[in-house]
Length: 337
Ligand code: TXA
Ligand code: MG
Image 1 (cartoon, rainbow, N blue to C red):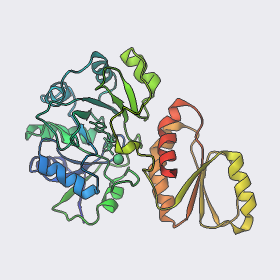
Image 2 (cartoon, protein in one colour; image 1 turned 90 degrees about the horizontal axis):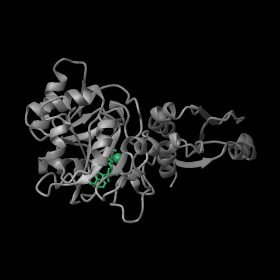
Image 3 (cartoon, helix red, strand yellow; image 1 turned 30 degrees about the vertical axis):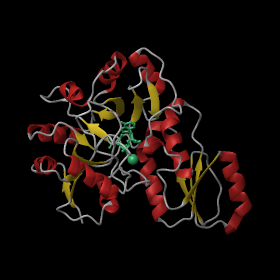
Image 4 (cartoon, rainbow, N blue to C red; image 1 turned 180 degrees about the horizontal axis):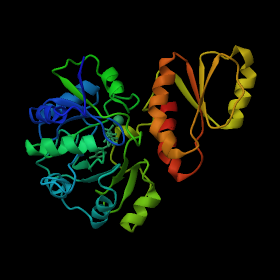
């Protein structure tokens, strides 16, 4: 079993920072989801992330940077990893860092090649979670400039939003191979918004809780939707974030009709909906929050919990057609693909 430490334990952050400096893996809480971290400039440590996740080596990882007010913080670290940074990208960093926004930037060719999955770009983000910040600061004092960290789940599975989820995903790793910092449930709950800033204009690669309107207002130019020329991103594969049960999206009316048709025969079905529904005793009904942020916060934990009850089907009510729901809608459509 991995070593699980409460991040409030006075020695926990130091132990985790030391492990990063020694080239070992650390599970860390961020405001979005838990990450599986390693020193981004240590190729063999980064390879251990790909191996633990079962992730193909050409799927790039996000590099996490310390807060801007520390020596070695993002204001200097960005220049270590990236070059030719466009003005609109700087405006996005100033507006949203620390916070749930990742920027794809042209990479300095001599750094973080393994973390970048061989791309000539690099994904950078400065997280706002206090435990992530404390860890990045302490690791920085030990010479770690950035922590490469994908979501701490095995490839293709639902992202973890608690330390227990991470321990479940990597139960096969020993306490010497993985230390997990428990910082409680992640407040945002879905992964960061990704904006590609490597092609001269901002392109939305992955929707999240920062909407295109907010990015646009902050950087002063339109944020374009993804197109075919976009670099590959594993979080953008059609089928991702998949629980074992089959996920299906339906509007409230269709859900009620489907439940009525099955009647008392409905079994092995869980429903996650905002609309109040009538269902037989064999159906597990779970209320979806009417607020997008509240739904994002609980989404992955709910999918894991419903999956763990052994249901074969998870029927989910389609999110409202508003941009604040884009991140949740995106993750649900991928879970259903
Ligand atoms: O909120 C988050 O972003 C979380 C936390 C831990 O920070 N991380 C996360 O990492 O979601 P991951 O690896 O599960 O998803 C990162 C996404 C992937 O889709 C990856 O392909 C894309 O970012 N990405 C990273 N670097 C890239 C690059 N240089 N070019 C294109 N896509 C990149
Ligand atoms: Mg992921």
